[in-house]
Length: 131
Image 1 (tube, rainbow, N blue to C red):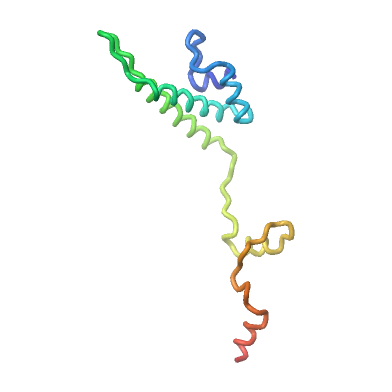
Image 2: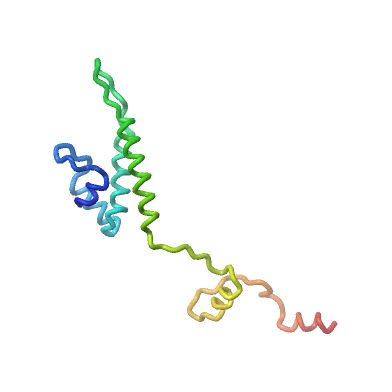
């Protein structure tokens, strides 16, 4: 919980942006991944500030759009950090002939519904060569 608060800059105990219960919920929803929970927390805070309008009373001005912009920058930085630390690799299957052959030979793999020449008779190719 402290790491999420630190990531989102919510460290002022006198003015918390989220409750401990809200952060606990976000941690639970994100399988205790503090970076993902931090991103979700920022999204919730941005939603809160996006509903508020800037106010001016006399010489005092409260600008919620600046707070929103600050959290948007923080959101972008956390998303970038997440993409840099992700250990997921992108794989596109079925591109090479060997991938397709491996899939066809795997009895446990779900086979494609259609394939090239699926309706051809086994001897059609030989007949064309002979004819």
